[in-house]
Length: 222
Ligand SMILES: CC(C)(COP(=O)(O)OP(=O)(O)OC[C@H]1O[C@@H](n2cnc3c(N)ncnc32)[C@H](O)[C@@H]1OP(=O)(O)O)[C@@H](O)C(=O)NCCC(=O)NCCS
Image (cartoon, rainbow, N blue to C red; front, side, top):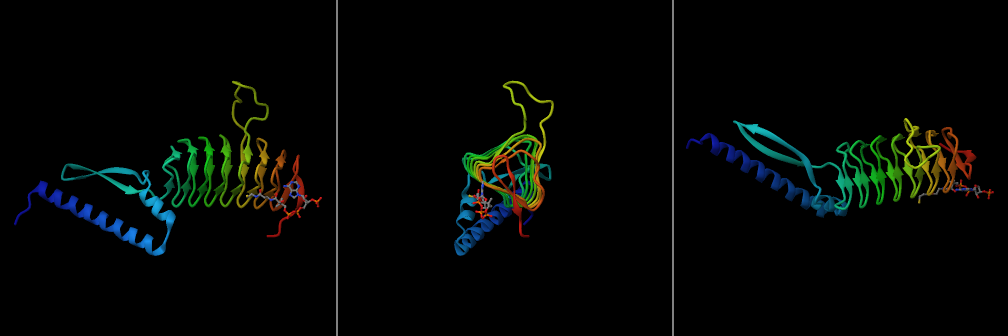
């Protein structure tokens, strides 16, 4: 039997459909076996497919989509497409289109991330954190709940600085709950900022700082 050109396209389409269905069934079965609740959530998330593209076979345009390799909760608003594999963005979080989020990050509920923000890999951002323009977060950083960043040292309503001061949280550093980081500060590698501290000066690597203004409490054991 000869297959005409449009029929061959249909055959290919059916193969793709059957292929993707069987892949989904295998994934579903695996997720039951492994018992990964989060994986199931991801599978049924309304935001599951966003990588849409079109391929052409013999002049026929076929719309394809493949599953995201990161998770956005159905009540999250993630406008950037620059989110690394395995990252999770939870409910009531809003990420603006210019932001970059690395791999395997966990961005918890009620987080706001502006455009000029770069976040590395394996970063944890707990609930209630806002990350403004000019702030960079390196790999393996932990940001405690309600930690506060700033980017304007002398703020006035409707008066904007020419450029926002840059704040860098270096690799492996941790910020305790409810601390405040003033603008233009660098927190050194593996440093620890105590809960509720107000950081007014840059912090060297591998130390713990506490208090208002934050002062060095001790060197960290590596
Ligand atoms: C900073 C921190 C790591 C220090 O822990 P630690 O090494 O066990 O320190 P200690 O509890 O032995 O305290 C040492 C001294 O620092 C003081 N101190 C500890 N944490 C402080 C803080 N956040 N602010 C002010 N002073 C603090 C203590 O009162 C103590 O002072 P004293 O010797 O005069 O009594 C810890 O207290 C902290 O703030 N961790 C962050 C917790 C957090 O926010 N987690 C977020 C996830 S939910």
